[in-house]
Length: 261
DNA sequence: ATTGTGGCCTGCCCGC
DNA sequence: TGCGGGCAGGCCACAA
Image (tube, rainbow, N blue to C red; front, side, top):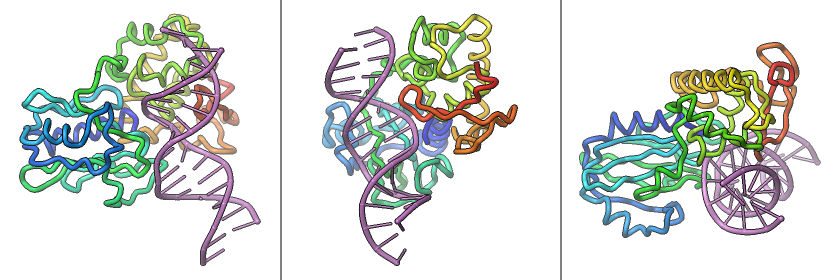
C-alpha cells in the first residue's frame, strides 16, 4: 500500500514526467475525493492555467507546487496510484487490484501536450487538498534526525508502533514499514514509546533510515525482509521463531517474540 | 494534550 | 457456479 516508498516513487514520476508542464484543465470527477471543504469549481479555478514547478513529499503526502503559488496536495490512502501519461508510479500495490479501471479515476489534471496526471484509487481512501497544512505532519521519516525521532516518541506511554504510525509526530511510516523497522531494530511493537534507552533509540533511528532507503530502492513498502512471513504459520526469517500476531495501535501486527524486546 | 475505538471506503478471497 | 461475510489499513471523528 502507499507508504513513504510508494509516494516517493510517485514524486519521482511527477518530477520526471509532469514538471514544467501547464495544467490545461482539472477533472475532479469525484467530489467526495476533494478534502478541506473545497469544491470542484474552486480547485479548477485555482489550478487551471498554472505550470507545475515543484514535486515535493512529506511523509505520505505528495505536494505539487504551481507557478501561481498554489500547492496541490495528493494523498493515496492504501490503494491510490499516481499515473502520468499512462505511466504508473509503481507496478504493484499490496491489497489492491493491479488493473487500471477508468472508473477508479478520482482526480486528474489535463496537461499541455495532451497527457494526464491522475489519481486512481479503487477504495477512495485517498484525497486531494489545495494548499494543505504541511506543518500538521511531523518530520519526514526519511529525513528525521535522531533528535527529531526522540522528540516524536517523547515520553509517550502509547505502544511504540502506535507512535511510529502517528503522522502528526512522524510522517511516512505505515503498517508494513512499522513492522519491518521494529523487526530489524529488534524492538517489540508493544513497548511504551517513551521507554527506549538511548542505545535503543539510536538503533531505531539507524534502522528507520536504512529501512526507508532500502524500501525506496526496492520500490515498495511490501518488499521488506519480514513482509513475506507476515501470515499464519510464519516464522522469523532471522531466528526461526514462530511470529506473533496481534493488534497494536489498532493495526494487525506481526513480530518475533524472541529477538524483538 | 494523550490514547483508544469505530467507521468509512470497496475489491478480493475464502468457504459454503 | 454464485453468493455472502470477512478482511485489508490510512485517516478522521469522537470519547474519556
